[in-house]
Length: 288
Image (tube, rainbow, N blue to C red; front, side):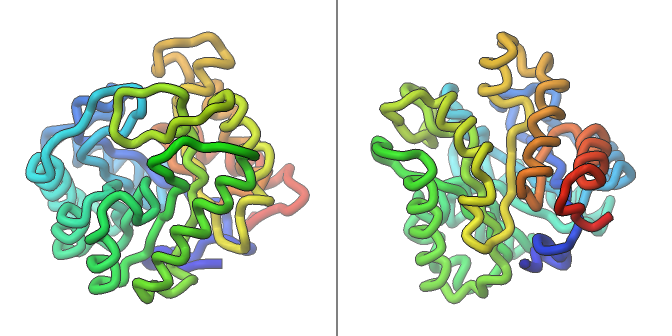
């Protein structure tokens, strides 16, 4: 069990929901992009009314198949603008999706409580210093800049353990950490900066991970982000992310029944309904 910001996750707590707010026009799912004050405010208020437990703000897309890198200044500007609007609209905890230390520092200085680092503190060596100084709650994702070899479950567990070691060196309490096995970032090829080359089938890798969530948890709460992602499009033969809602809800339902403690999603209302049904029907019957 952990305490992420002021929200208890894992154990017998309900499966939590994290609403995604993208401020990056480059993002793969265009419907999630909000860039002006009115759209950000309305989206956040809607997510809150639908039952979101957290808001996750991103200022730079990390889709592995897109060329999406922007400057740190641009990423920071986008995120800080959104943070200020969110803080004036809701008291929900804010997570910032970044792997850059400078961006994380700026966000933490503005009162953000959670850093969601898709590199698991490995991309920017200065991130360790920043999290050590501010001691935020952390979402640590499986990440490797090299080519992945071997069993995907074993390797994913190793990558997460490596990130946990970095967090420990940064003196982050273990009960402020959630793990994310990084669905969608392990590709054979890609244009983006934030992907891991994998010699086996990336689709089979992601499916294998989702089938074995309890094996990967390692006694930590686990966050799953599958919303509208490529593996759903691949299975359903739907290239447009906007056509993947039903597939997303099906995948999130299975994840909730298989050990996920937080579902990060573009579709808060639909996801909350799915989680409620999954929790009622799951043998573990979490929080209901």
